[in-house]
Length: 197
Image (cartoon, rainbow, N blue to C red; front, top):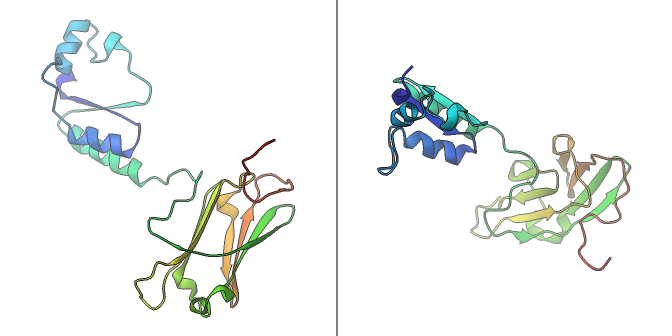
């Protein structure tokens, strides 16, 4: 395999991969080509000292650009870590809530008696996303109005939750969210508090 036909991309993330895939065959003018680097090092490899950095994928041949683009697309489609629920991308009208807990779960209740608009919430208009440290609830406007949707984002829980085992239910008078605790511990607060210790 000739080093001139090889392409290396880092696995730092989808954006870096996409950028690397777009730069196939491009070389900064002040830097030697990969073939020249390999010839200078005397190792026959285009990596300095002949050592391939960890986390680097090399593609070679005429299909290198296509393989790199496919790799970037596959990593971009991979699910993101669930450390945090996403932040709302729009303004939300704030929802009030209450909470309670048991040994293995925390329950959050959002009552519909906060507004007449919430009298008949369609479950199809409700979305809830969980992260280990946060939750995002959005209730879309059923009437198609231009008002912001109702929403609640709680972040920085007292302890981690298990997003895959957390659930929610839309009932006639409220939304009940069950956050499954990762550890069986009593939470003195729902959210982490900042202050004097």
